[in-house]
Image (tube, rainbow, N blue to C red; front, side):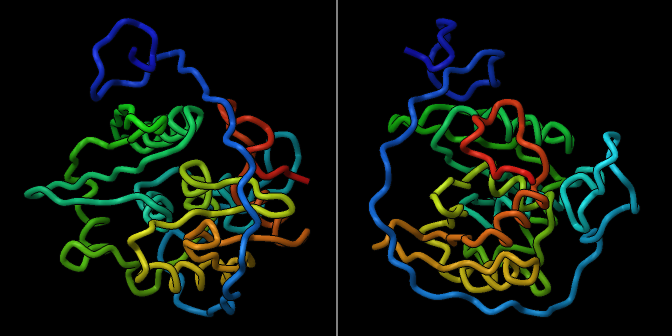
Length: 250
């Protein structure tokens, strides 16, 4: 039976208004920590900082580089590529896709992509997960050119993270792992792991790299200060996300 319960045949679909949320997965086994990358100083590209110094409507001070300090942009999709997302080229266009493990992630990602003018669709994968794909678009070609070496994904020189990018990464592959938070990586993206870890360190989120044997690949962010920083950067919890799945803002 199709996931949307509307009697539609399986296959690539536009996200329905109602989407069932699967039961949470059982607790993961104990993790083995591998290394803690050092914070790296590096060039900060355009658009990394806030568009303006401002405060939120409720009077809360906005966080430097936080998700709320600038308008959504296509460059933010680099946050998906820092995680397990893939990008492919076709002619003068490109498409980004990512497999997620929960229905709420589909809701959030499709909405975030729409804010950036990118149409997206989803389909069940057959293993209780969901593949979210953008349409092929010329506007995504520069992102693909920056991240692909042939067919290998690797962050471009000067890659950096900010709140908007982290918000997309967390929506696609962030997992609460008390007393910390996991940010999952692509299993076949070993060339990405080190530079992505350095970018995390540069924004105050240096974490432990978990190898596949320990339930990774993923970065495990722990510590009260780092978790508070993560929550401040990614911004308020999306409506579709269950409270335990999103960092709690102080």
